[in-house]
Length: 296
Image: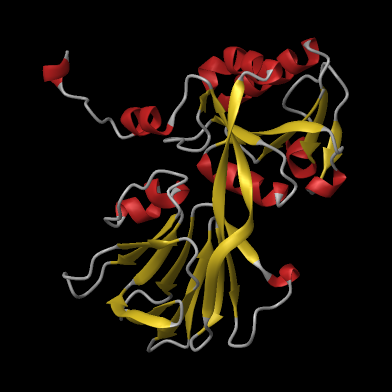
């Protein structure tokens, strides 16, 4: 069996868990493929029980790679998704971060979770991505598209004046938002930045996107849920000559006047969920729903 490992630099407190993971994989005689920069980071930090292989992109991986393991928090998981691209390789994450909506495997339960993964005792959830490109012309070729599993954010660059964000859905004006910015989130991303800005939690598979303003000047302006078959176009007015455009963990500076186009991607991410996990149990646990002394 072949599996891929993706990770980024971490604190020394995590090394014992990473060592335990690689020891378990070696004991099962798993062929291990490690993301090259992460492999270099680990070189003098863990004791290798088995030879590993390196990769930079999914094109370097064997065609029969069973799944990818992301080691870190949700940010690392989002980066792992960008590495997988449209390969269809299933992905799951061991949470070395904080909340861990996506990287849902607890670091103290690695052995149990790995046994389930290696035996195939899990489900695959297909998660929608956003496809986006910037420019005022027709849609470019696929090489110029960027993708986001969580959200795309338009936000002011300077710390003073707000911006005006013109949002169009299927070429019809939705609203001109006077705000610090605007978030377009998938159901997967509804528990991330959008939630902290007052957006709703939307169950994955619902077939929707969420459009959430960031600190709108008009308090009557609320988040709105639209069909994920919609195409969205964003145009920005600002006193500054640029604004910030982010998709998941990547941020770019874009000139004011440049349109941002957003739609559903042509492929989905295969997210692994262990049998005892579900979306509802995750939000109960992570958001502390029902945590009240009257329940005990």
